[in-house]
Amino acid sequence: MADRNATVKPEEAKRVIRLATGRELSLVRPLVMGVLNVTPDSFSDGGRYVTIAQALARAHQMIEEGADIVDIGGESSRPGATPIEPAEELRRVIPVLSQLAAESDICISIDTYRAATAQAAIDAGAVIVNDISALRHDPAMAPLIAASKVPVVLMHMKGTPRDMQVDPHYDNCVAEVASFFEERLRFCDDRGVDRSRIILDPGIGFGKRLSDNLELLAGISRFKRFGAPVMVGASRKSFIGMLSKSSETPDKRLGGSIAATVAAVANGADFVRVHDVAPTVEALRVFQGIRAAG
Image 1: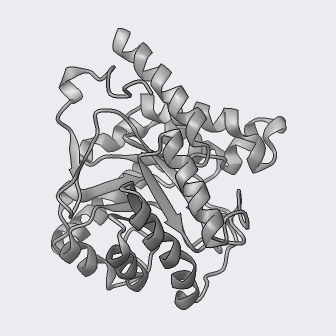
Image 2: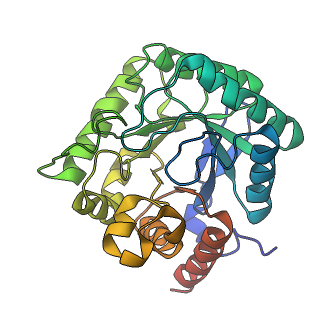
């Protein structure tokens, strides 16, 4: 496999995010986070990876395809989703996570807003916490992140998955998301969460209209002023189907997903969270080559 760092510009070579284990994730190129939903009801692939064997096979497939991180989630956050019991989330994610950690040195992220799940996942081998509530849901999450020193993804979401798409409204979506990040970063500062381990996610599709999603993707560079890496998860989202009738179902949105992902990276995204790892890695490798030649 070709060296994916070969087309990196020199000024980008020292950017890293440090894990609690002492390992560093280099940000010399956009990092690809593969989505692994061990749920029966996720919007795109619910029910495909509900057994440990299915989930592990998919994780290893994504690793082979070039994923830098595998993000394991046990609760659907699709529009209209209702929360599950904490014990059920643990039952779904921990066996898969612990086995994957034993079989591979891939960086594992846990997609949860519950501190108890995050702690169990860290104990089992997770090195990143991906919290769609941006530490707002569980008061115990911020102290856990501060103490464990794991990187954390803070995502913007208007409302909750159950109601986030019920008539969301913004006067200026990019500015309002930026204000949200300012408030969350102050919150983290006050609670001892190390800024060098914070990743910001504008929350494409989470309480957003079509126009909001497009404005956020076009405006990623405006979030770079916070000095934190930015993650974008546009993969298979419904806004793609709104733009193309041929992409009405999630499994038909590959072209649109890649277009949105490359646009996000062109505008400054450091992490991309995707379902389709291999074509995304290929697209980003070509994009990096073109950018380096410019």
